[in-house]
Every structure is written in structure tokens, then in C-alpha cells.
Image (cartoon, rainbow, N blue to C red):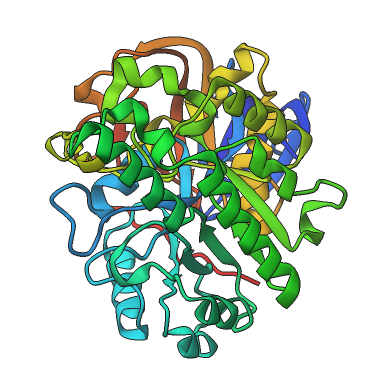
Length: 446
């Protein structure tokens, strides 16, 4: 029974930042010592974490690992390793793959793939269509993290655009409904307008006008209305506008909320001005919008209107990111640099490190009711990350682990570094080295 002592760290957990040590015994956190107190029983391995913060591993509840069927651009193996290098110890994968995860058979196949290939812990969503809500009753709520609902992004038969179907979905499950909210009718009107002016090559800078504030707000408003009418558990993903924030409240604790909101790292980092330099590398749906929207989202993270921070990690090949606002594919790889990006904002006074931990680890665990993860607590799974401030390094292509081998953050210099990532007590990532033999565990939900 191996015992590992991580000593002399600053532990960040549940709103506190304290010097201390943690003992890992097999897969779990066995002891937590505050101050100069230390393990009483002998340990097989001692890790000196002087100068580092010890955080619970990030839980990214919004990733597209492109597996099965789209593995020319990403797969579970490559992207889960990128996650580990970024301090992300658990992921929840989206259903718009090939085949789509919209049948019970496809769901089982996805779980099998994740079990064989994922280096980090995992679950996946069941994708809603206009007519598959009758299968919801057969989903195992202890295995499936939620139902993914596309209310406006055109993704084949996963675009749910019939009101009767929407009502059946909201009224048809106790699982969390994770919604992508953009109004397709408004997007089409905007697209037709700009195509008349520019033809088939609409400039990329107009992407946030095609997928506009109003398109986001109207769809999110409808989702909230349906959730209230049916008492459904709704989580709206990648909020991108200040206007949408009026749909949410922070007057009850997270564990009591029936309607929650997510912000993505990209919308907290970038603004429409970045299209000039980064182009389609930051093209995503919903679109990156104004500096005022970004500021409102950052403030909403602090106030509690935004409940969690995720990535919407969605790799494409660079050749697929060409063609302006209409043709360049939407999505970017973000998981490897998500935690350090948010920690960098602590240096600028945007967030505290305690807030980053709350929104990237504690909140996902609470919202999804994940068993024994997301906190540094005795008896919990030892999903932990050591990060070091004041350690300067620059993002280059050779350090990118995602299969697509590019990032919108290439050339950016960080002062925070992920040094070690433990998954279920196993040292999976260690200063640039990945244990390629290790596989994560399936998440379980209460």
C-alpha cells in the first residue's frame, strides 16, 4: 500500500489558502495536514512542493474529443493527455461525433472507447434529437453526466428545433440538461443579410454579428422558460453575452440551483478585437464578442451568476479553419492551457486563485453531483495538481499535446506552470512527461 507525501505546498481548497501537506494512499487522499504538521506514519515517497500551490484537479464538463469518427483532428488518447498536462483530471465528452451519441448503442460504444483510451477520468453526454427522448428513461443517471441539447447550432440531426420536442426533452428527464443556446432563425436572417453584401466570403470579423447577442439571448431565454415550466435541471453552456446574465440568479447556493450557467475560457480571455490578429483560430460558437461582454462575464464569475468555467475544447485542423465567417470551422483546442490561463488572470486581479479552484473543480463536482471528487478532502479520490507561480515559459507547437498541434495561445508566455498532475493518486503528468500506460476511471454520479 503505497503512501506518497506532498509536503510544503500551499493548499487551495473550499475558499481557503493554507500551507500544508497531503498524504496519498493508493487512490485516495488519506491525510491532510495544515501548517507545519506532517504525516505521522512513514511514507514511501516524499514530494517537496515548496513554492507550489496544491489544487484539486480541474473538472472540464465540456469537451469535444472527436472520437469516434473524427479522429483525423483529435482523439481520446491525445486530448486526454493534453488535459493531464493542463491539470485537468476529469472530462465530460460531447455527443456530436460520428456516429453521434444519440442511441443507447452509441453511448455504450463511447464509454468503451473512453475506458480504453482516456488517461484522465471521464463521462459523456447523451445527445438529444427531435425524437429520441423516449430513450431517456433507460439512461443510467449514475454513469451519464447529462443530456446535451443543441438549441440552435446546426449539427446534423442533433439540432432540436421543434417546440413539441423541446417540451418533451425538458419534461422527459431528471438528468441535467446541458444546452447550447443560439437561435437558428436569427442566425439565418443575419447570414442572409451579410451574404447579400459580401457574397459567400463574409469577413471573419463579422462572425459575432452573424451569431449575434440577440441570437444567444432569445435561445437562452427560451431554455430558461422551459426549465421553469417543467422544473427541469438546466445548465446553459458557454454564455457569451452580458445580456444573457439577466436570466440567472445568485440568491441561493449552487447546490440548490436548478438553472446554472457556464463560461468558457475563450470568452473570458478574448474579445472581438482579437480576430484581427488570431483570425479563425478563435472562431467558435457562440462567437467571441465585445470587451464589454468579456468584462461582464468575468464579473459574473465572481458574483456567482456564472457557476462554472469550462473549455468547450474542440480541435480542428488548421486547414479546416480557413474560409471566413461562413466556411471556417468553429472551435479551438484549449484544455491544455485552460487552468494556467485562468491562474494568469489572478495576477491581473480578475479572479482569486480560490475563485479559479471553485469554478473549475468544486462547482462542476457539485453541479453534476460527482462522487468523491473535486475537493481536497480525506477519503476523496486523489485528483490533484501542483502548479508553480513565477515559472516563465512560452507556448510553442512542440509542447502542444492535442493532435491538431496548434493553439490560439501559441507565442504567449505564461508565468504559471503545471508541474504534476495526479489522477486517482497516480502521478500521470510530471514536468512534461506523461505516463502513457495509465487509464482514468469512469466518473460516478450520486
